[in-house]
Amino acid sequence: MKINSRTAEFLRKLIWIFIIIACWELIRNAGNISPLLMPSVLSIVRSLLKSFIEGSLLRQTLFSLLLVGSGLAGGAILAVLFVFLSVKSKFLNSLVNLLISVFHPLPGIALLPIIILWIGTGAGAILCIIIHSVVWPMTTNLKTGYQSIPQVYLLSARNFEIPPGSVFFRIIIPGSMPYMISGIKIGWARSWRALISAEMIFGAAAGAGGLGWFIYSRRVFMDSQGLFAGLCIVIAIGILVERFCIKRLEENTVKRWGISIG
Amino acid sequence: MDNILTLKNIFKTFSFDNTLHSVLSGISLTLQKGSLTCILGPSGCGKSTLLKIACSLESQDSGDVLFYGKKCIQPDSKRVMVFQEEQLYPWMTIAENVGFPQKVHGNSNWRREAETLLKKVQLSGWENRYPFQLSGGMKKRAAIARALLSSREILIMDEPFSSLDVNTRARLHQLVIDLWKDLGLTILFVTHIIDEALALGERIIVMDNTGSIISDLLVDESYPRDPLANSILTLSDNLKTRMKSEDP
Image (tube, rainbow over all chains, first blue to last red; front, side):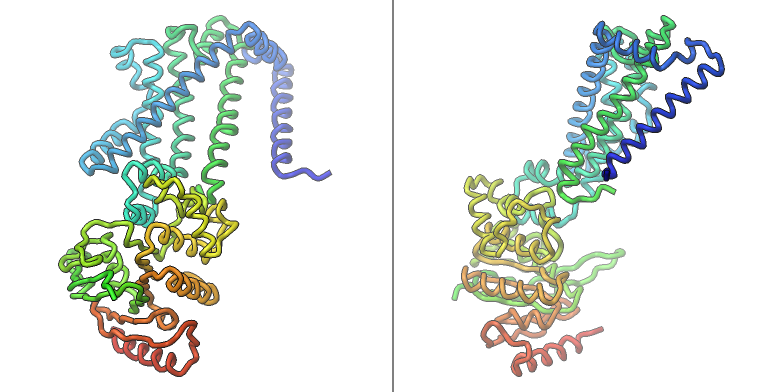
């Protein structure tokens, strides 16, 4: 039987997962390590299912996803706005460049004390940190994307008297798509990390809390199985978003258009 | 015949390394409606700059551009240029690329009109493909169709076929001639290839490296032209001598 390269790669990864699980169980049993430090894989799965059936993990996961989705959307809208302003005026471009150089190197979590002072500890504060994590890499990438658009596209648009709004949305935005997707990848990774960190620090201040708070609270109650179950969910969501959202976006845009994304 | 496009005493300088370099030194020319004119000159002699000025995509230091006797300052979709570089948008299908300017300007029939023009440039069946799925010659055909959908008056072409192989170029020359005859277009075609100018031009204007016109001659030969015909060979030698004498 012949299998294609994608299936073969999937099978190789599956084999590695089984090897890692086997090693985990081997070390755990051979070293007589406490289940508090290294719980069995089976107990982690049981805890995962229990939390899902009770509804707490699902609720908290959905809450985290809603927050990160809103933050990503807000960051993306702000990034598009910043690039639009940069394109329109050299004076505003200087301001955007200044903001990028000041805020881009600043980790979102470092802003926490100020955000707590200004906004408090609710969902709004977490949203602020996510937007901060997303907007600067996305603006930088979009700006690079704009600069990389062949001049002939813009010259041709001028020749056909295409209105500025259409030039921006129908030429500049799709023309920047390879860089925009890189920006989304970086933005997603940064926002997901920022969200989990912020939820761990803010706790359940925002309603029932999110996935970060779920993990943190399991540690407080010495529920190691639950803690690892939470980590598994964080990893699984990361992989699913990368594979099904970002990859699909790539396939429906740059790959479909035959544009190389490096 | 009417004068469709007039360039009057065009001067243009560019600044490189804090030094001013003259690119066009007082170019004047008039195109009659329905003519096919080639501008021939070595690379870097200012041909492309002249075309951009003719479309008001670049501003001149002095001189005037007149379209049907009316002074032009802003670009307009009546004077459309086909560029040397790839100009189709990779994220639009061929039909969308061709119809895009019309769609944006509110023409609800853009797709039907685009498909009609694509048929005219022999691209039927390729409407829903993306540019990367087309060969270099096909992309040029689509770019010509897009220009024609906006303007049936004048087509301004900046070395559009220079990156193509000889056979594809010959087929596209025939397409340009067919479109010129069928649609009664005015064509201003820039090239640095003598054979291309001789295959296409009713009139050949030769520019030198100083950005001036050194020769303006009429080619009284019917189409399609035989490149080995005596009259064409004589003209070719004549043009080669003129262009060689201008080499730095």
